[in-house]
Amino acid sequence: MNNEVQIMKIMELREKGYGYKRIAKELDMTVSAVRYAISKSEDQLLSDSCKECGVAIKSLKGKRKKVYCSNGCRWKWWNKQTRDINKKAYYNFICKNCGKEFEAYGTNRRLFCDRECYNSNRKNQVGNAHE
Image (cartoon, rainbow, N blue to C red; front, side, top):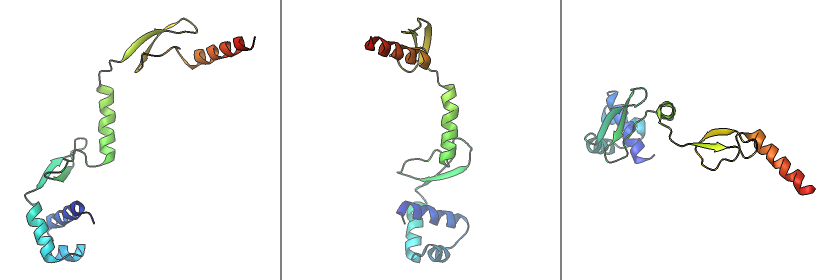
């Protein structure tokens, strides 16, 4: 078992009111190992709340601070933020096939307004190559 995970499990059991002996028995450890882990980690445990749902989460001092309680909350939070981002990468183009003016996001190398114009242009090029 990973040391960090083990410490978190010890602390969870400690919060439930378990004593050293009971924790040692539950996790198949020695009582002295449990006592040592608790003494070292009590001052190193940080508590915070999930950025998305507000559930209490704990992380160890010196390690990366936990911000979300789960991947689901992390995904929900990021998906909300993408709607609020001020998107600045809009570009204006003139379609190489139909000549219509259009706007596209994200790339400054677009040549066609849609897939139909792209396909039509390719067919015209292939047709001209065979003649």
